[in-house]
Amino acid sequence: MESSFVSPQAAPGEALGAAVAPTVLVVDDERNIRRTLDLVLRGEGYEVIEAESGEEALEILANGGRPVDLAIIDLLLPGMGGLELLERIRRDEAMKGLPVVAISGHATVHDAVKAIKLGAGDFFEKPVSRERVLVSVKNALYSSELARKVRDLEAELLARYEMIGRAPVMQKLYKEIDRVAPTKASVLITGESGTGKELVSRAIHRLSPRIAGPFVKVNCAAIPRELIESELFGHERGAFTGAQSRKRGFFEQAHGGTLFLDEIGDMEPSAQAKVLRALQSGEVGRLGSERTLQVDVRVLAATNKDLSREVAAGRFREDLFFRLAVFPIRVPSLRERMEDLRPLADAFMASFCKENGLKPKRIDPAVHAALERRSFPGNVRELKNVIERAAILSGDTVTIADLPEDPHASPFDDDTPDAPDPGEPTRAPPGPLPPSIEAIPRTDAGRRLTLREFRDQAERRYIIEVLQSLEWNISRAAIVLGVERTNLHKKIRAYDIRRG
Ligand SMILES: Nc1ncnc2c1ncn2[C@@H]1O[C@H](COP(=O)(O)OP(=O)(O)OP(=O)(O)O)[C@@H](O)[C@H]1O
Image 1 (tube, rainbow, N blue to C red):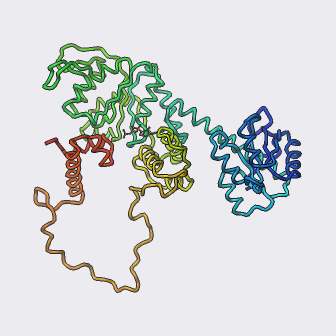
Image 2: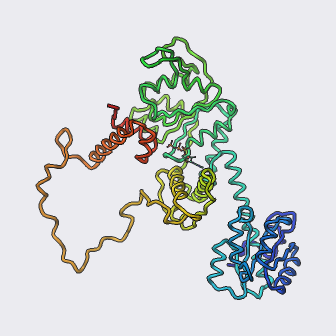
């Protein structure tokens, strides 16, 4: 694998912008080879450390007296073999990023492939050629430096936005966040479910002058319609049946900070009117009180609905829409930034293992590739769930077997058409409909149910059953049903399910 992206004429460290000459650890039991490599590398300005065995190499690397920038490892070493040494290096948190070049006199193709799979940047056979060694070492150092830069950049983005992703659509998103955060403008954050809209709202708050103030999140879809106004604006004691004490509303709680209205597209029209008034006047009044309170609140709103369509359909107030959408931000779906899938998956795996006291697990590249073929309608949240499940099921390495089946794969994905079996005579279509057609369920109007209607009815019945058996504990029911709580609330409303 001879790549020419770094000129072998470049001085050591030149491609890296490094001030100090890189140090190469040469691990070979043959003295002659060590000498040759030492001469070639020193002649080009590298520092060289020699080790006769894998054990000695590990000692040098573990002691870290002199930091090593790259190791050249002979695969056929007495005692601990070169492949084992490579494996030990990759398993060790402190050494695993070390670039390695493998060499051998008599290694099999299988060994060479294994070395590359274990992350050796290159493999070549003895006797070693000067040019080959130099190009290989420079390329390996350059790739590892690039990988380090990418990691640094990712860490920088993560520290600033607490979001993972470097795709161009994410860069555009970060720019928009940077622009709008310092202002007091309302922001309407749109995007499919699970894309990170809440993370965007938190980043805007964190990067705004209101950082020391509160960040109050309201899930408009989860609050029962009869409570939304008292939740938003508060109430006085006795304002309505059940109002046993005075309560500050979310607007008041967010004074001096940011109010994040999540799922704004699900807000009731009467609450919409009151929110608009509060935004226009900067005043709120508790239910049951004549008094109004001045509040200094910056409003961010999010929805996965197409709000302009909701406006056109008369379900969302146009004036509120314009008030909220002073600065619209669209969060891209995962499908638009598949290049971010691997770093996202790796980060979710690392943080899940850490949080749960598990040993760090590696994701097999075949798993990354399989995930990249999926469509992820549930976006980053869905990916996170898949990874966390795999983290629980897998051994040290996550393999394809640890992935759940793709619930969104079409049964028609297999593009081999069902060819008729030539050996079998063509069958006549099935006979007349069975007499039990009358048993097929009908609507109240007597019409037979469409598939959609049937599905909705079955879904409604099942939700009621689960809710009843869990004594209406929504969180637990959501887990059993495998949906988000918000989504379950929406369905309860859409199906008009009430606790009987
Ligand atoms: N860019 C990202 N980097 C890291 N984690 C992310 C990213 N985007 C989303 N997530 C994670 O995915 C999950 C869903 O994100 P979030 O709740 O912000 O999405 P949302 O768009 O607000 O979803 P919904 O529309 O369902 O409310 C969270 O666990 C979040 O931490």
